[in-house]
Structure formats: C-alpha cells, structure tokens
Length: 297
Length: 298
Image (cartoon, rainbow over all chains, first blue to last red; front, side, top):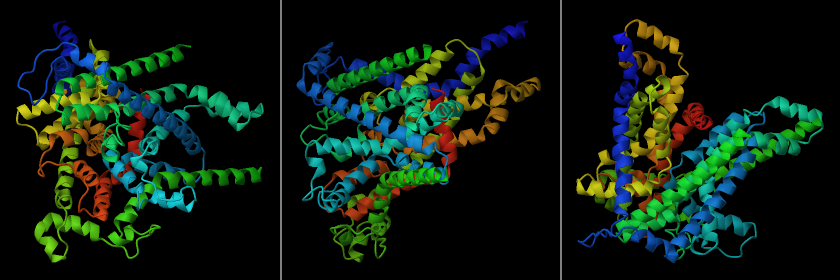
C-alpha cells in the first residue's frame, strides 16, 4: 500500500528530476532573459549614460508615436505577406509535382534539401554574388534575354532590393514547406480522387475540391510557422542590404539590432523586441483559433 | 491512353527540370565560381564552367591559416586578406559548437522527453506547450539581456556561452521530436524491464536509449544543422578570432569592402555549406522523417 502511494507521487517528481538539465538550460537562456527584457524595457537604459532611470511605459509610448517604427512594421508586414504568399503557393504546386509517381522522384526530393541546408548568411552571400552589379549572373541572364539594356545594381534601388530579398528568402524556405505539404498530401486518400475521376472531374477540379480542403490543416500549420519566421528575419537583411537602400528594407528585426547594438539604447531596443514578440504571439493566436474552428466544423 | 501517359511524363520531367534549375542552379553556380580564377570571375558574359579548374581560392584560405602573413610574400601577392587567414579557425569553432550543441541537446532532451512520452503528471501539457512556445520567441528579444549579462559576467567571446545559447532554440525541437519517437517504442519491453527490477532511470539508460539510437542520431543531425547556421548570437557574443564562427566570418567577407578577392569570399561560402549539405544528402531519409514527424504531430 505504502509502496503504491509512493509510486503515484513519484511520477511528477521523477519528471522534474529527469527534466532538470533541460529545464535549467531553458530557464537560464529563455525564461530569465525574457523577464529581464521586460524589466529593461521599462528603463531609460543607454549604455553611454551612467543614470538609468525607471520610465515606466515611456519607451513604448515613444516607439508607438515614432514614424520610423510604423515604417519598419509596414516593411516587415510587406516582406512577410509576400514571402508567405510565394512560399505557400510555390510549395503547394511543387508538392503536387513530387506527389506524382515517376522515376527519379526520390532524387528530386533529396536535392531539394540543399537550399534548406544552406545557412542564412551563406544564402545571403550567394544572392549577393548572383546580383552583383557588374559581374552578377542575374544581370548576364537578363541582358541575354533582352529584358534589361544595361547592368542594374539590384540591391541599391527600390523596389528591386525588396523584390530580391523576398526571392532570396523564399528560395531557401520553399524546400522545407514543400516537404511538409507533401507529407500532408500523402494523407489525402487516393480513393476519393478515383471516385471523382469516375464522375468525370478534371485534374484541376479534383485539386480544388478534394485536395485543397483536406490539406487545410497542413497548410495552416505551414502558414503559421512561415509567418512567424518571416517576421523575425534578420540574417538575410544584415548581409544583403543592411536595411537599405535608405531604410527601405529596414524590417523590425533590423531596427531592433540598430537601436540596441549600434545606438546602444538597450531600454528602447528591449521595448521594440517586446512589441515584435507580442505581434508574433498575436498572429499565432489568430491562426491557431482559425485552425481550431476549422477542425471543429 | 499510352499517348496520355507519355504526355504526362514529358510534363513532369519538364517541371522537374525547371525545379532543379531554380533550386540547385544558384548553388552550382557558387561552386563553379569558387573554382575559377579571379579574372575569369569578372568576365562578361560569365564563364559558366571553370577552365582550367583553379583551387587558388581554397589555397589562400588553407595556406593563409597556416602561414599567416608570411605566405603572402611567397606567392607575390600583397597579402592574403585578414578574413581568409581566420576563416579556417572559425570553421573549426563552428564545428565544435554544432557538435557540442547536438550532443548535449540530445542527452538532456532524451531525459526530458521520456516523462512526457511515458508518464502522467500534473502540468504535463503545460510543460509541452511552454517548450513549444519557446520556439516562437524572437531571438532578438533574448539577445539584449543575454549579451548584457554575458558581458557583465565576463562570459562574452566564449564558445561555451555560444553552445549554451544555441541550446535554447535546439532543445525544444529535440524534446518534441524525441517524445514522439519514444512513444513508438512498445511499452511492453519497458514493463518487462521494470518487472525485472529496473528503476525508471535504468529503464531509460538500458532500454529506451539503446532502442532509440536511430531516432537519437536523426535528432542529433537536425540539431547540428540548426546550430551550424546560427548567426545573430555569434555576431553579438564573439569579439575575436578565437571564437568567431564561420557564419560571422562569412558575413564579414560579404559586408566589408576592401582588398578581399571575390573568389575567396565565394570559396569561404562553399566551405561553410559543405558540412550541412553533406549531412542533408547522406542522411536525407532520416532527416525527412524527422522533419515530418515534428510537423505532422503539430
């Protein structure tokens, strides 16, 4: 009797003991920093100044009334919406292709992992080279195709800088999204398709009326993750454009970096980071509730 | 009907060719560029295939690392660039970090994942949800306090700090994958062990971990890939050649204008891509199943 009781209490304790190393790491690297960041965001904390007074919500107030913040937010949203739109659309069609049965399909899937495995910084370096104003391959291809008369400095004018940043980001992130959607496709039953084929539905009608609705949960999950990751973009911007030309590719991630580590304003940087975190959370909740509602129907 | 089949194959292979050109082409061009001479690189229109194949760029990186400045005079160049000289060291640093992160994440992650997979306890779902929520936190929000703290404690510019920080975003992923994997092990095997008198701890060490070896290896590889490309914290924490990672040096190459040769920049990029791409191709089946099991269960 005593032994049994002991066992019942021990599950929770055992779980705690087993998870201690992991929880310790996450506490030190995530939990405490978040709390400290919230705390910092309430102070005027500039590294160059000795006095670091408590200012309450003033940092937030300043940010929300600053035009630069709204510019960055708009830039981030434009970037995220374009990137997510492209990634979901292209990945959906690529997944449809890879779902077909044909020799060489395995190779194609394997090779698709290459862009995924390339680090963001190297991806940026790659695109910087492709887009080089004087020796870039893109310039060569476009001028051979007769689309441009003379070589263009793609990354130093708008809107081409934003367009290429979007393309470079999508290029790296489409492969994973494709594989995720492909996994979702394989749960769509073939018998439904066959039945519709007997009824005389075209391939396009079948995709639209059978595949797409059944794929909705998968697509929503991919949508959530891609949106959240796109809002956090930093590495690519750092190497490819440094927020330029002017401030035209200065997304929120870049603004936080500049505010904090170049202007050394840790208080307002933290506040800005908190705002980015809240926006991310807000978007995640909206999407999740949509997913939830969709599943209940 | 046969005609239709032929048409279908032609369409499929045409689409596949476009896919390959778009997604593999840029990467191949990077490799091809790294094997050209500097003057070929600047040819308009571009030289598509290096002829002759030149390893000059790689030699600058390898020799630069070994001979420092003295090497420059032996080949009659003014100097091999600073970045080229420190690149190899940074590559090694990245390896140390990524290997340590994957080892410790899998070790800590396995013990944390076991109770989630096998036991019922209060707060289990809260724990699982918080672990997932960690992935949503923007790294930049964590970066500010971590950098301040590391500087105060004199822990900046250290590989150990970076290993620790990398685990913050690798661990949640590892725990999530491993708990899904542990659930696939039949609990009868475990019960047999418990009847024989094994404690829970022994069950994990002697039954679960040996049986999960394929899952642990897959997870370790994913952890390696995740931490190999980390840039933000490496940029903020490292300050000297002793701790720069390959991504930091690659970014330096790409954003600094100066006497660096383009082939060297590109060769450094290719070298940084080799470990993750090799891993991805060699273990593609495991990686795909790992990535997908993480996603489908979401």
